[in-house]
Image 1 (cartoon, rainbow, N blue to C red):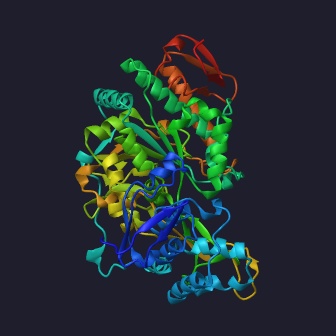
Image 2: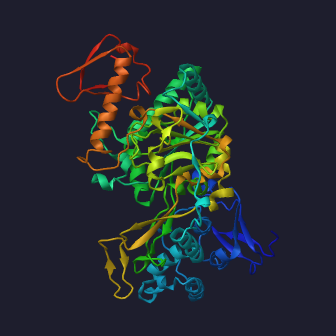
Image 3: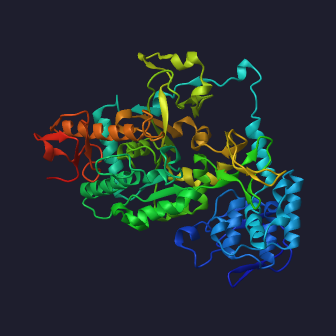
Length: 580
């Protein structure tokens, strides 16, 4: 790039000396000194983008009408890399007539001019908010991804049907069947990497507890344990315990597992407030970093961008696949590089049994030098509605239950007729090498978008009234975290089967539903605690139906450290919080 103009900074604003004459834009080190380090880091890498997509942003900068942080956030959004939401910047930039005309024309050219239907009715500040929301969006891009999602390529013949096979033996292991020596070796190796400060955790925690009857972030939810610990607290204490175990094993006192927590717009502030209120559950606050996943416009069944109000576009989180671009856009990958991190564990907040930064999983993945590894549990039966990890057309992939024929779902393993051939149930529990996360800008644009038909509150363009539909009226576009799996050669992918009762108990449904609900989460933790005690040589007794024991993660991560209970009798229900 050899631009014939220069950008100058004055009082936190950018001004162009003359009209830009280049085709692509790269951002580099446009850093505002008042930004916090993590936000600042997001600008310290290079990104490239077609110039037409940024013309209006550049012209705002040229006129000195937008603040530097606002410009950079808009550029990141246009790159589909996230960025701080404009609502957080007050007051908004009030667009000039020329800016409005130019933006309106770009939307009208794309057939999306309806977003300006009520422009003339808006107050200046409302116009500024809508302008700042519309400016980073490329309506032609939205048209393309919507069309592709609504009309995916169809298979033309039987020969084009995907070829589904089990993952090769070289890419799989099972803690159920593996030799104990191998498991211990991987565990020690993983703990050593933790002691070297090479391991980090990424938590996907953007969801609210709506189905649970709560508007709070799902991680704040109390599943009814005797200790009343939330999901966030259970996971934080497991990280604390791992750091303690690594320090103890290697005579250190500074083992650190940084925790990167991805929130959404509605959950960002309440999540951070919750951590502040609980003093980060004993973790060092500088090692707990929050970032926000991106959003995409919601569209009608005809592909038209919807307005939530007369002055606001309806948007929705971009799915768990938005994790990748959010990691780049937030500066988290840059932060990982500065810390020297090499191995990253990512998981969803709603699994109360998750073994955060599991040393065994980390050690296994590192030994095999893979870029992605995933944990799975055995499918309960042929009809269980779960996605499956398998080999599709020679590549690692996840295939949804609905995509598999009944015959394939019921097929038996040729090596063991007691097992299903396709049994590796996806639990969204993944390992990534740092080098793979560094490569996100090289492949993120290839991730497909999927449609979710939803009931989306929106403005009736004929009456101007907001409608709250009782049936799906629009589409939310989202990406899936596993859609990058096929980008890998098979020798860079691995799969570890683990015991469901020890590592997977999702919280999806309301109390009383009987499945994947607070009661099952509580029961699974309590029964795991009972097993821990019995394996340590304790006897657990009970008089009622509640036969479980809650074992605090602060004293045991996965059953270790409970020798002091050998020979003792524990009456359930009970809580083991410390050695006494």
